[in-house]
Length: 202
Image (cartoon, rainbow, N blue to C red; front, side, top):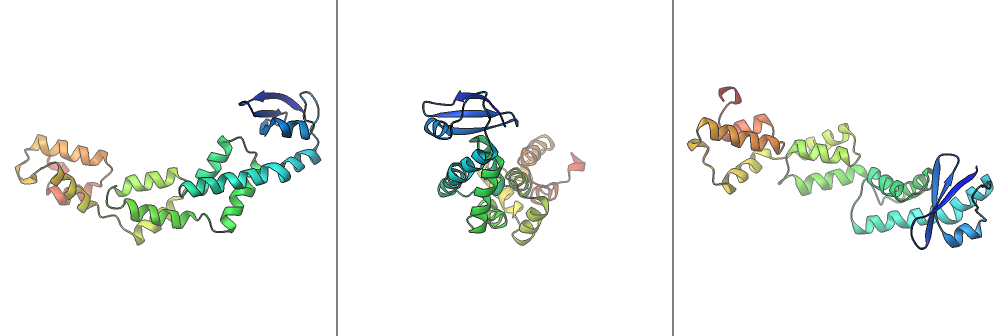
C-alpha cells in the first residue's frame, strides 16, 4: 500500500492516507518510528506491526475509557472508534476484547435501558432509540415483552401534570391532547383507554 498523503489533525497527530482508501491516525513520533513518508510504500509487515504494537492497544484503551464514562452498545463503540480514525482491524479487536470480558452485552444494556426509561418514555420511543443504538428488532421485542412499558400510567401522569380533565374536553381540545400524546409515541390503544374516546369520533 502507498502512503498518499499525511495531513496534520492537531499539534501532535496526523492522518496517514493510504491508497487502499482508508487512513490511520498516528502521533508524529510513530510516523517517524515506522518510517512513514508520502509517496512511499507502507509494507504489509509494517502495517501489521502498527496495528499490533500501537492501534490495538490504543483502541482497547479508548473503549474502556468510553465504558467507564457510561454504558454503550456494540454499535455505539464501533461508531466512536470509526470517528476516531481507527481501522477496521483495531475496531474488531477492541470490541471483541470488551465482549469477551463481558464489559458489554447489548441485551443487558437493553434491559437496563427499558427499566430506567419505562416510566417516562413510550414503547415506540424506546424501540426507536434502542434500534438507533444498534439493538435488533427481535431482541427489543423480547425485552419489552419481558419488561412491558406502562403507557397508561405515563399518559395519566401527563394529563395530571397538564391539569387536564378528559371529561371536560370538547372535541377540538381532545383532538389536540391526543395529537400531543401521539407525537410522544404513545399507542392509539393506550391513549384511547385513558381518555375514553375513540379517534373515529373526532
